[in-house]
Length: 221
Image 1 (cartoon, rainbow, N blue to C red):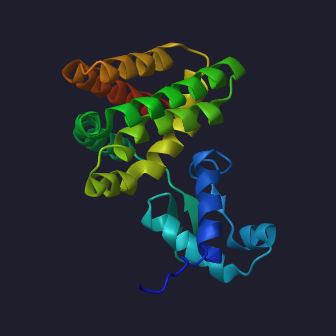
Image 2: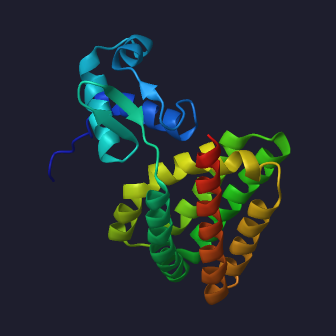
């Protein structure tokens, strides 16, 4: 028997990165806002070295833009970025749904139901952060249960940016208007019943509508 080994704990830089990533997604740092390495280091009680490494990791995820001699900033997508991002989702998410239905329909439905329940509570509380998290969990359930790690890795390239756009731009609207939440419930029903062609049509409409919401919100902010 080979000796057993424990996975090493997350490095300090990874922990800093995870916390900053969630802060960006939850809107603690506004889109386009400057992030001071010194402020972050002082807040976490760490040196600037792990903060700098964390910023590099966030830049690789597209969540942070580092401008040499200027500073680090939360990403702000252009209209072209939003269009490309939505097109990517329209291509990849229906395939994830198709695979998830075939690979682990029961698990996917259970995860989507839990997400819908969380979103319903968030709507009642007018909590856009909780709604954004539930919305993200709903869509990520398709990838978590699709059984194809390459598809999962592809989505992870954009998942942080999508989650941040949801919480910052669309969730504040979604918690006070029923349209988006109703669409999510319909998507769950269509997926659970295997009506995947209709599911894909509604998902495409839903993603396209989200893109328009992001674009409108960015023009206002």
